[in-house]
Image (cartoon, rainbow, N blue to C red; front, side, top):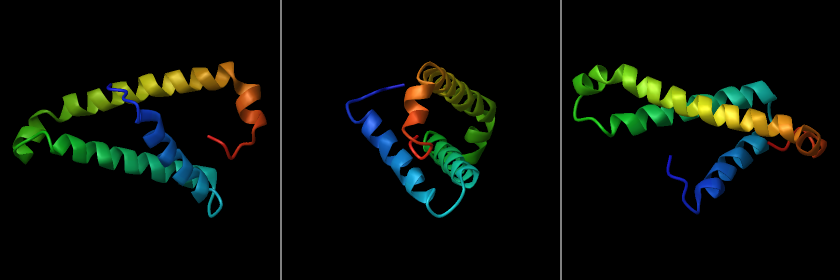
Length: 97
């Protein structure tokens, strides 16, 4: 993963959008929508690397494995971070991701 100087700024923009949506609907609904948007974008990014549906179909399992591995690594890192900083992070209020 390429972390450039704007990496966290872009991530924070997505988090801020989701945090704003919490005013309109529940936590799980916002989470589900954000995950759907992520996987939809991942599929589109992947499709851009192929010249045909057949080519993409042949690489389907590798594409899914790549994104699942990346997601798991980032999820583990962030869950561990919340465990280590639970009181600090959750003391700020549950609306802050």
